[in-house]
Length: 459
Image (cartoon, rainbow, N blue to C red; front, side, top):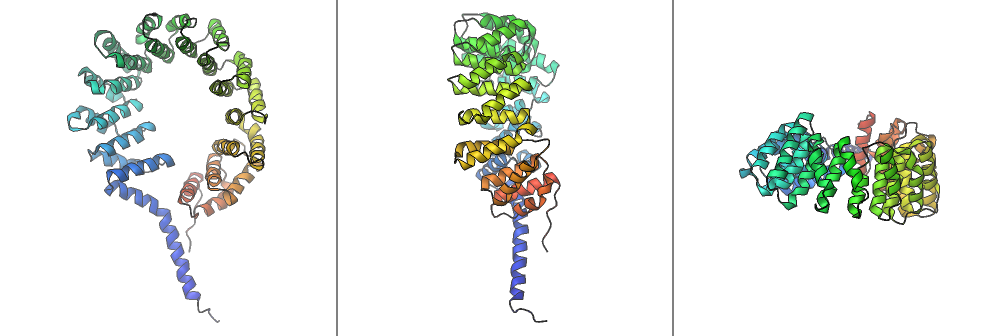
């Protein structure tokens, strides 16, 4: 048998390509770990931004180890922020240490540590934060009040403890006019009914500053104690439009015929924020009787943000009537792109199986008509949709995006496959793990892992 003289060169090239592929597959992770071990503060900050944008968490353990051994402010603040945004535990010991040994840390590190402990609702941090606030170090008061409210909500007992401390601070110490609002917000964040009497006093005091009354109304809503309802209702008829809209928004957690009447009445208010508040309260209470009002406002209100909130309220209320309105708003091609996109998003949350093929049809229509903004918006809705029973059309468009799509379409198609368990597309997914664009290849590998698809090694 005669062997082509170029065959050895082809073999060499083939094996080089294999090694290059395998190296690329593992290089990202190895490079990231090396950056954490040896990188500068700037390199680590850039890495954290990359992890944040890619929603990657496989390096969390390495980051936890990193902050145990560094006092670099930029690194510590970056990691505390990254974990705090995801409410991810694991840094509590280091964060508490940053507070208790704050003389050895920068202000930025201490502030980010306090914020982190609040975001994860760390029960262990409550006495530490109270001790910090007791020192009355003004540089930490603002963030300290906020964190104490959040952390105090971890248990009912801690909530009462935190609320008692905050009330005493507000009434008997001097948090400063710039921090009074933060204390009120923190009282609401605890969820403790202990704070209701003080909040009622602030709400009903017409001589009090408007921002404080608004903050107290929001705090009463967060606590949701029926004892605060009358004070909220008393503010609905006030002349100040900001207090009035805040009072309507605060009615969301409460029930009763009078509350419902006030919410529906607020849709007639000439101040747009009050109409937004009415929509939000209807959403919170899933107020079916508000559907006609929401439809009217979604179709005719001259303020786009009012229309948005009404459509989102319809999505939260769901039900046959609300779903029908969403369907109409989405399918009416004369409506603005903004109305159609928000309606599509809500319709897919209410009835994904019923609406998935309609979404695909409208997506294709916007592509044919070169309606780029609408197409990109509908593509995002499609990419984020979770469909209990994916249709043939859904699988077909996912496959088309994977094989012939743009970069954005390929990325969304991988999300579609991962969100909806489209293992039938395993061949296409594996093929995308070899894509020249590393973002696509990385997303494909993650999708394959999610779906339990084995990526074969080349021989």
